[in-house]
Length: 338
Ligand code: PEP
Ligand code: MN
Image (cartoon, rainbow, N blue to C red; front, side, top):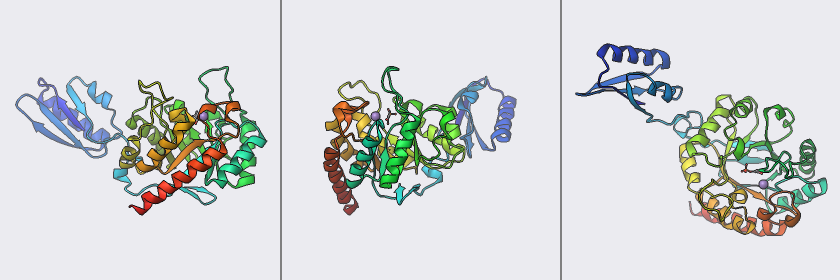
């Protein structure tokens, strides 16, 4: 961290400020005295330093971080890829490609079991379905809630596929105990109280990128979970809001290699919510695989026109089968080209 002091800062003030920084944050402070101003260079772990607090000091002209504000999610301090063992032989981040497929909303036992069986046959390794749904309209279908969780458990029992589903509030954490991966949706990416509580449990957390979140804000949210002790975080690029209205969101493919470089956490992509259109799922999924994702979320429904949510972006099981084949072929070609 670099701190430029104001030209009128006295030597005594500079010394007192430097001592305070050393004592409070356990950092080394290098001082460069120029003709017009003095610059302090802070060495050590500066992640706990509140940059706004430093900026608010009378003698400070400006302050700049030269290191990322996140540590646990940072590849610099953890060079090896994190591999998350979900159970039932599923590992995310080990170089394989895992597809989490299923309907946007769990609608009935028949529906979820039928979809689970078909996506498994096509190569999906996890079943994803919403029980508690965050919907833009309060009048839209809100999910089957606890019953939806029970139906997911039945589908897991029938297929052996680990289940992934979204949590919306802290008080539901106990209810989510049987879930294999807990999803935090885009709208809750900065629900810090929820993130803190999820940091206290020993379960993989799928953290979606917020609609307008920067990569750094997204990684800081992962840091919230990890700071609590839970290092099993999977990041999901699900499209960001841009000026483009043709698609539901804009898949930020560049975020995939960027986040892989900055962090050791597994990164997956969600071409379904990024595009909002079923015919765009295949090309976006392929682009994400080429960019190096560890997995994909793909929405699949047995009857998309009658789906209770996100029918327009859902593939039929038959379409999913075709897309999955192409995805796995691409993955093989990329692996052979390493
Ligand atoms: C979802 O995954 O069903 C969902 C609502 O996605 P997002 O949080 O990315 O909008
Ligand atoms: Mn959906």
